[in-house]
Length: 98
Image (tube, rainbow, N blue to C red; front, side, top):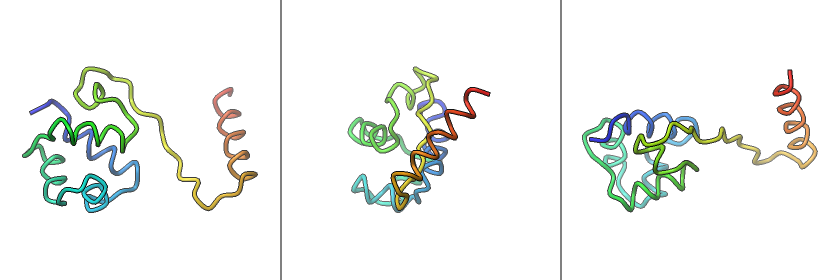
């Protein structure tokens, strides 16, 4: 088993506000397989590992433990106007400079 992979996969899924069923649907696998990945009972195939990296917008090196570069935080801006998104971007920039 790849060290910490199961923990990373669960944390990434939760940070993206996805259920195991959501991930399973996107990868075209069963929810029990996703559960197995997150409990460490199963190891993703190379194909599914790559699909997971695309889904979570992170590198396979991060998933495999070769890199500690965490993926960027993703904000759900669906339903927000352009002005609201710009206001969020300004707020984030302001907070970074404090």
